[in-house]
Length: 338
Image (tube, rainbow, N blue to C red; front, side, top):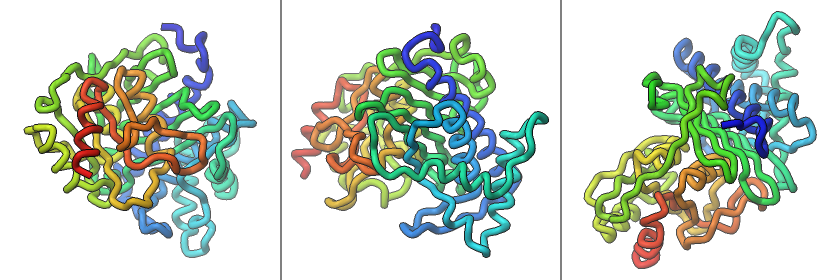
């Protein structure tokens, strides 16, 4: 498996190592601190781990691909406020711990803020990256699942995905948490333990979706937060399909990883409001991962997700992720329910 010699080999290696370093920072923050969350304008939380992870990924992308725009979830505006000076100091300290070396001076708080804001692009272009430094911040805060998601979009299609899930096991011989899932379009989906990410081609293991074609026999997952997905409607759709199992509720794009490696066959994210549109960073990496694992990802109408409209999936409503074999039955059940 010669990843570095194939299409987007350099992009994959940079992305996988970047999310691996971000995962180390997030783990350190959660172990050593009681993470303090700020509340953003949309009432969602953000922590120094979000900021530090985004700065690490920003540094990696700026160093390797300085011309590539980046659309990220976070910016440093909150850290610029005088009352948050302590949080900026902590963010800088953790950034330097993970990114630092004896060959350079530690980054200043202003430099860390600039790296965070490297992801301030709002509009799609021919080639751009999208980053969610912590997908599932509430899961991170409560000690549950979370993910670090990074994807490269070219001509409106996701072509490289790296998804670190610090609390998921990589499987195989690596039972310890710390899985990094990744995919390149046309090259399949893989998983590696973060401790081995420096030799990605030698140590990665290919994964694939489950094989169940009977909707009644599938396992499915959904978001923990009822504000993220219409859980009552999901239950009705599951009943219509004859699904007998209860949903596995976990935070973040770790749900995509579960479908990609066959631990679940279906992930439903049904819109809670007709006018709501999903953010691209919440789905780009996971969508390619599942597709390259042999699954299918669409919106609730069966339309492929479109990543060329900027920060939101403006042409799509909701998200349906499956092993592919049951997808049409699921879409039909959603349409019948609605």
